Image (cartoon, rainbow, N blue to C red):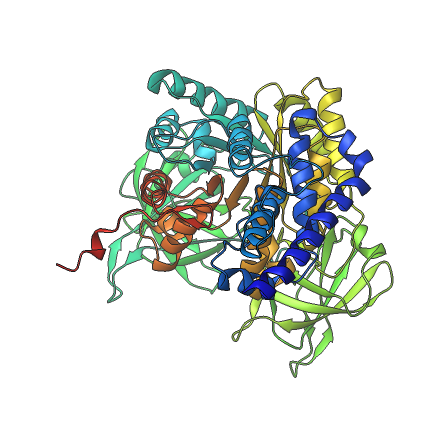
Length: 613
């Protein structure tokens, strides 16, 4: 035991010295940190130094001596090392006084307290007794339905998230107004986070295949019609908005509607050479509502005839219909060409024997990847649904060999995300649109989410822009959603502490695609460790209770995920028809879990199940 203690004393003493040396090497950088957060930055540097050594054997040796391991030292590294050294010295028969040298910036009490204070400053107070906040992404309906926002706040929402990639300023303003009214009614405060859209790589347009409207009745499992389709007939020259429940709108050219009465029949030409009958059930000043008991595919320009008691009263044509854009089908082994041009893409063109004479192609927006991607680098589409390898890039076109598309193939549509995990992209995280949105948002929100941050320069760019707008007091949320951001995380954290408050969002959707699904749990764990060392609150995001929010019933796996999310300071839920129920359910899970676990440390609450009788 004595020899083990002596050996560990030397090893832990070296760890302490290295931690102080790394801090000293970054002294100039520490001077730029906000004074109230400087001790947190020092502790982060100490933790980084600690994790530069493989400590697995030391952990086992410490446990064999009955000492606490170093695994829970994130929030107070130097004081943990000092405590371990004192205990080791006593076991070895040495003086057990604390080691000399620089005093630790935080201890086992003040370190966790700083994390709590920083979370409070950025995210506000959580509802009820739970320590973890709940953030909710606003659906478009939150702009027009004040009752929905009030129900979310009553269910336990602590932070409203506005996704600036969707809706517009008018909608955002209405969402905020509905929240303020709900706060006044319920006497609760709720923070607001605005996520900037950022420079997300996406697929561009695909050529339309035509202008066709499809409609049909609802049928039961035997194929019998349960309810006919409701079709809104309106003049093509001055269309009226359809009523709720209408499956499709058919604009009509001619005098068809003027002559229509309830009970009449409108016969339209189907694309397949058939006539489909629509029964008119009601008319208004300029439009009519009809029902259809057969499925129909109606093309723009098709003929339409109004019939009453087998007599044709009027004839016309179908007016302008929306363009039909079909996704590009892809299978493993296919070739896909990404183009710098904005010309719409198209599926592969085949000859009469079905052989490809021209590969599928689709634009990639924005164009920066064409100057950065190299042959051999991986590329993923649509959150990992389709994967490939770039085989050639001439600056204008990239040839991609599809290596993954699922067992039955996949379809690539317009506006789908593109991930380049192997590529070092130099794209500023603030777009021109982000700057415009920021100038409006800083007057209304508490924090701003920085999307696709890749380097400390991205963080400083946002902070400088916010200070220029006189909004330096607002919080910043760094969204970690690329491999580049994860690999730069320590530098991103240090840069962000120049202008706190700050938080980190683990955006697990894009991040999983970038680092690989098999690595996501490991990477998520490392982000939690680093942020705890910096006393920076974490937002656990993407697909939390998604089945519950979308379908009303959670899966067993996502309930476990929700329980584990309590290790973060905030959990984000996405929108869905059952989002209020999801907020209420998550709040209950977090309430229960707080008695069992704080971060990753078990609290050893008395267990009723431990009673043998």
